Length: 500
Image 1 (cartoon, rainbow, N blue to C red):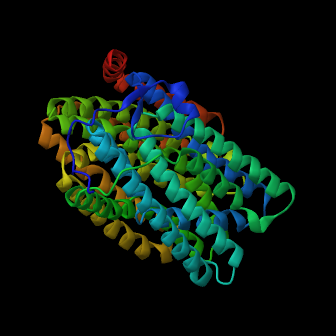
Image 2: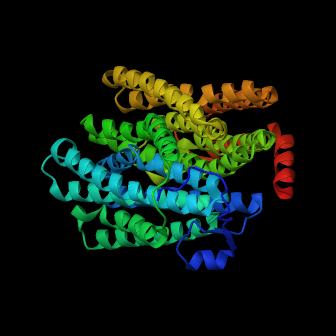
Image 3: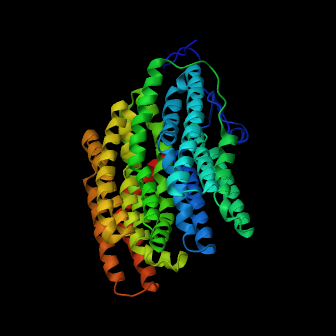
């Protein structure tokens, strides 16, 4: 029997369960965890962001500081290959789980069958992409290295399943559970890597990371049931995912592709410098994917209720909060980039300009996440608009990167990425600003003022030949100035978040 497309048909709504029970049981589309206050939800999600960002950072730090030149870029290139492969379907499938499982909360029959459908798709695409990524690695990226190819394949499968499981957990309100298991997977990955390094098992460097994602996925695989979903709903999901794939490849896929390109330049030191910069920028860049999972269910649920006023208000509040947070974080990181590299990668000073460019690009992308999800939550056209916008940014950015590589090496790749993210980040802000009539002129002016301040502080920093107390002072000055620029918005955001 085919399950209806959507809507309530008398089958009821999900049972509400406490977070303790949610932690100890597998996710089930027939239950939702108790709703958390907005402030607590944001805090827990932020912790999840930090844990996930720390995984790759600590991984790269241990590899880069303990193994010879070349291992850092080779390991990051392999990880980027797996991450790029997941952009071909699983990442968007995870977003589809976050959107549609949340949207269909009014009909348990549809919701349960939908989860089953998405789970099957996750298994099939994970296996196919794992084989593909391993084959490409063995034939082109690391010719003849069978062990590396196998681990890239397994890592692709683990990452793919992770994206689906995380999407379902966010859709059913299990944000606390998702974050706790992020922590456990971190322990598995980093603890396993320490053992690999102690026993000098260099060919097995990717095993602990793969195991971490596998533990998360197996423990969180949702219970499913029911028959096939309706053709209309299935078609809507497929179109959403297809457009999402295009958008993911043009953003997250683009970032991972830059690491692969850097490794293929043949400049081992330059590629290591790029890997070091990417390692430092990646934790911040992961904010985007987690915010998507956090925002899309809430926005989609409001659209499903026809409450467009709630969508507009939620978008405005979340966008202002995001600008305040990521603007302050990224700006401070750019000003303090020279000091950060000196502390973390003392032998890779050439990573400083690359890091500054990557941070600026990642800020533009991350700052557009709220408006992007607002566009995507409305209807299928939103996913199409975002996919086309991101594709334009990808094409232009990749063209610039390839043109600049001969003269600037890995810095040219970073500048190409910045060019692409300028298009990807600014266009959706303008679209939502005009569509909803938001009062963002003052906010935009303050962001531009922060950018000018950053440039001025970098000019002052250049008067000293190396990192020192001047870097610390300038970073602190930026933080204070940024908070001063946005103090009214900060008070408003905190007050409204505590009420919600």
